[in-house]
Length: 102
Image 1 (cartoon, rainbow, N blue to C red):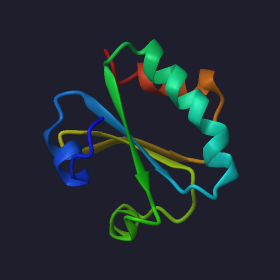
Image 2: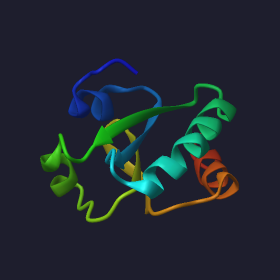
Image 3: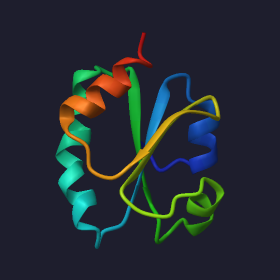
Image 4: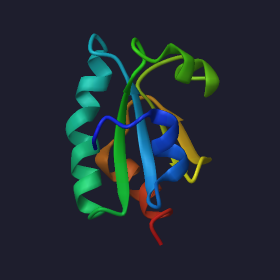
């Protein structure tokens, strides 16, 4: 996804957007990267992935109460549909996302 402004992406996207709050030094975040990519691929474009580096975007983390990473929030037109922190299996994440893809 092109480097659009975070607010624009979560408010204007027609598709649901899964925001990955991460940092480069975060081991669990790196563990989750391939899981996220596989899940997004399997959902075939129904959900977009937006990676948000918390180091560069502290205000977004504060705004959404993200205190630990990795943390995932699913938005659609600015509304929070789902959120969860920590490591998940591909199956857990896929099941959660399928509930929002119709």
